[in-house]
Image (tube, rainbow over all chains, first blue to last red; front, side, top):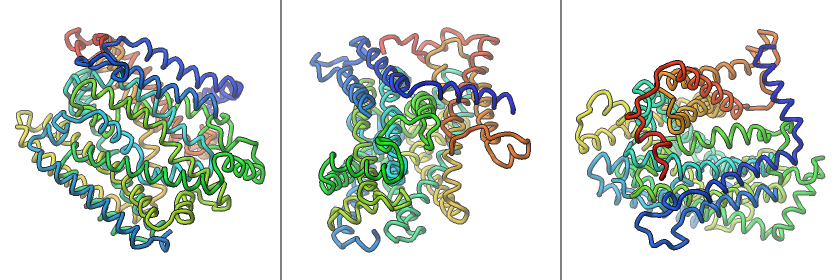
Length: 77
Length: 516
């Protein structure tokens, strides 16, 4: 056994010890964390400089929809 | 499926192919400079880029392969299109892509010189070029082989026809032709696969009927209920997609490396008409990506419910189409398959020509070249690379093709992790410097090669060792560890050596671009 084998074995055992319910929470936490980051982005980073200010022009909305769908999918399956 | 194609199917296919080439040639008449050719004159709209991103990502073999993997291993394969795409695209949209666009660069290696040094730029350019050129040959061959099996067409004819069609419009119209033909290809691809979904579900009596049939198959095969429809698979499952590889290898390493570091992907957003359009294209692409597994992977489950005894998963999609589609619609699916193939080949061809022309020819041999001269060089390079790809496709056909394809998937995993480490530290950590970047990249690639070697039976048995990885095809895990080692080396060497000057970091690090 090389040191790499020991490290690999350690990580393998650690990952096997995590219950699948907790794994789902990790997946969802990643997506929810990203959604929160998107929602907190400054307006000038998500809208066109010459825009009218209407909601559909704000990329924050569409990025949230994309991530919201992901959260829904990983909740259900 | 070969004997199931009618005249109307061939008419639909021919109409699609001729239409694509005419569009590409028409765009080519407007190309006057190198900037037009490689960056579409920085005039591309967000909606076209977003559709092109999706079309480029899904190759012809992917349509068959993803459906096949869903048939064999269940819905877990959809992770590659969902958590393996959407988060990275969103992060890319708001952090990385705006900086690349503002710098006015043509290639990702070009960014590396602005941020680090010419050595890092050249190392990354060489690795990407080698991979992309070989990958072009592999895509041509793998798709030709698939067409040979599915439709009974000759491999040589398929390789030459695909190369000729893609070559004509890519040579004429560069990135603009690639992106606008991708829009058609994306529409045809999604439309063709959507038909398979609708017709298949209708035949099974809806989603409820499909799930009921799948539960029966699971029960017959001694599986747990819901195993084939689960997205998250246990770490010790007999599957190529355990959650550890999906989360750490795919979602956190390979996916960001692909969406923010792959020249064939990023280049189209560099050609966006504005910084906002570049961001919007990635968000639009992420929205479309939510749909892709439904139209590509679910038909694999439909095939499982309908034909559970096929054996080979790659037969799933074609069998579904051959058995359920009427004449005419089979031609549409065929067009969708070829659209997916062409949209990937044209992008890799244009991207590899961009690297040769900008990171080697213009950088080392002719820095003062005019934009018109660069256009001529770009077209010559495109033709040469296409010829090399054809030659490589024929070379693969003479050796064992499937093995080579698997090896190149693994090769991609060798350098994707270290390449991501370069981009992340380059954009997000001002203390990273050129020496650390170069050592980290080379060290990361070398470490993944070491892991690969330790996983080879001849090596570990000769040394009396156990195999290092327990899962088959552990390429997701190479990328994780290569990334970790590359990051470790970049951080260590950078901290031990002099930092870059504030002036050099001004426009190339995210910390200094808070408004993006």
